[in-house]
Every structure is written in C-alpha cells, then in structure tokens.
Length: 152
Ligand SMILES: [Zn+2]
Image (cartoon, rainbow, N blue to C red; front, side, top):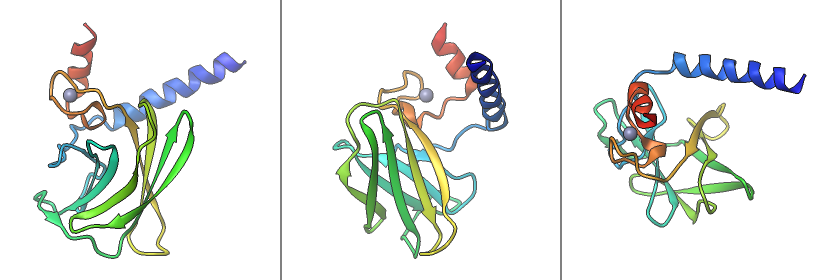
C-alpha cells in the first residue's frame, strides 16, 4: 500500500514538472529567478552561504525593495530553520548562513506588503556547479534536454 502511494505521488510530481518546463530565467547575480512575471524575485546564496533576495523589473534591472516582507525557511536535514531577512540597498539579505550541506528545500515566502497573503516559492538547494551552464545547480538554467544529457 505504501509503495502504491509513493508511485502515485511520483507520477503527480512528474506531471507538475512537465507543466513547468519553460526555460528558466537566468538570475543576474547568478541565483534563481523564482517568478515568471515582473517584478522578478531572485534567490541567491552568497559565498558565505547567507541568502540574498533581489527584486528586478521586466528588463531584469534591479529595483529597490518596497514594502514586501520576505522570509526564508530552510528545510535542512538537521531540521527546519527560519530566517528573518533584513532590507538592503538591493533587496533583502539574511544574517545567518544556510544550514550545512545541500540537497534540501528552501522556501522563500514573499508578501507584497505586511499582512498580505504570502506566496511561497520552493527551491531545491544544490550548491554544486552545473557543468553545462556553469551556474550553481540550484540556479541552473539548462532545459530538461540538458539535464538528460548530463545523465548519459
Ligand atoms: Zn545547468
């Protein structure tokens, strides 16, 4: 019974991925663009593993943060860690680094204003470098065909 459940979950996931197979937008900082429409939100992990969230207009020019409220939850194997982000000149930055390791989900929660309904964006955090696009794997912009090529 358990196995059946997993199989149906997997096929549901495959369908969801197929529907979202449009080529991702490359984040100007080297991070992942979470949004499909402007204002764009980029999730970027700095060298010291702190998180930077940057806003861009439709032409991918950085725009100063407005009244948005951002929070980040890292669902690391060591446990969930919630990050409060602080406003910077270009967006938001975290004070703490991401938990050790990778291969875990980071949820970026964006509220257009305090008290607004949050939008959750999930990023599977992998920090190795993609051979094809030379970006960190979590921000890889290769299409599905590229990923198939990696496996061969
Ligand atoms: Zn890639």
